[in-house]
Length: 451
Image (cartoon, rainbow, N blue to C red; front, side, top):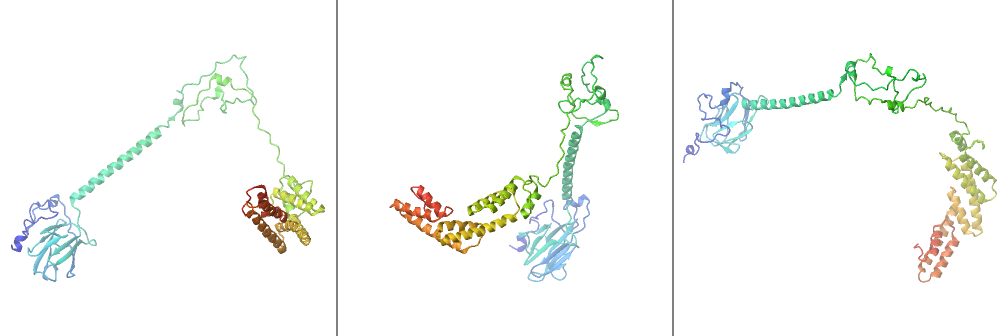
């Protein structure tokens, strides 16, 4: 079978040209092959670009027809393998491009599909023999024109969207008008047609009460009840927005309102200026904190307690009395809410700390370690720095811990001996020691406490 019989040009399907009834020839098209011509349009031919990847030849043109072949006389001259002559021709009909194979011996395919004619509508990979040509529209100069049928579809879509938007706008306007119609404007003539408020029958002239000028009748709702003569609408008001009218005042409701004297506002007593001796005078507390003289009679209760504690401290003769006065002073100053330590409080703290250190050293020299432990501990709490006091406390605590653990080991095997060890702990360290508390709980509990 020859190459010509294998590719009959008149029986090869043309992709994208379903509306064409007959293949194109060199003759002038009649209009039946391209229905777009009958629509009366006059589209300019687009600008196309061609590039051969094998030989590297490129072509950009908007002049048709475009002939592609192997030879210098063609618009796009391919170089490389293949027979000489014309391979294919690209033609434009009202902006619609088609490519037609002109040499049956040359294989032609569009996007890997073998064709003899093809409608070019976008980027396409064309194969002519051994040459692979990339076809595309040159966007820098022009592009393929939109067919009239597609334009009609776009116009129809725009019209439908416009109708939908218009319907929505009309709906919004109707809703706004409905909302505005809920508020009605009432003129005085329309308001006169409202039902009149029923009034009680007039009283005889002799029984009609003459209200005082200063007396006012107050309704139960807190609003002033106008007189019948003043209840009419003023003529100066021409238009007003009418809401739901209030319920009319019945004669029974009017009669139930007591006619009493107007309630007078409570008379406020004049504000007294703060004095120096006021209970909450911050200036007095600040003066005390700075160590200035403060009158005892003008002081507030907390400040009086602090002044009394200071006086008791300096009048004390024993160390226990000074400790009690210091504790009372600390409680009073804490109740006053001072922003910082007071001058007198700091002086007493330093003096008491030194006294405790001296007493602790005397007890240590007398080998009364338990009392020395207590005095050194209180001096350290007051901010005194004593290395000998810390060493004594650590030594006694370690010995107490050793005795406590000895007793714990004998808790089940020899309970009586264990209790003897715990008693030694309570006799060696004072109550503020951790081991004194554990030994006391072990003596009160048959199970003891693990150290």
